[in-house]
Image 1 (cartoon, one colour):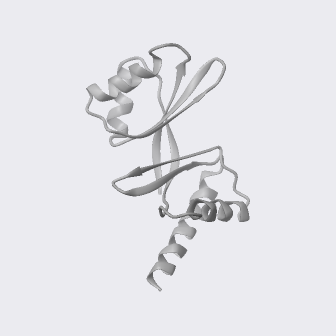
Image 2 (cartoon, one colour):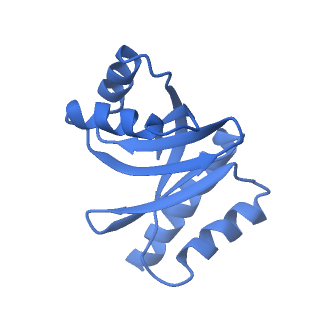
Amino acid sequence: MIINQLTIHIANCSGASWQVFQTLADMGINILSYSINDMPEYGVLRLIVDNVAKAAEGLKGKGIEVALTPVYSLNVPNQPGSMSLVLKELTDNHISLDFLYAFQYRGISQAILHSTDMEALQKCLTTYEQAQLLKADA
């Protein structure tokens, strides 16, 4: 399913990421997953949180620029080869990823995927998930 991720460009300096995390903590926002990638001039902080709208509003109120990025959240069985099957499906459908990261929440593994063609990604993964459900029911 498509969800919104918070995407924040932060300075490569001491305390920059702390300000984001502390602001969310002060607001009672639960961070479910995060990823930080560094670039020479800045870092890209990607967050999955339990209340996206409240988090975005609160961060903007503190002068932190935040973008909402649609990403695909996929339940992935916690078994060897599960993610390989997903990536094979994307490969077979000629869908490339811009980024991918994963986390577990309440015992369920979640992969977060983004492509420049989110429509094709959603169609492919929705079909894939439906096929997996049919297999499980058989």
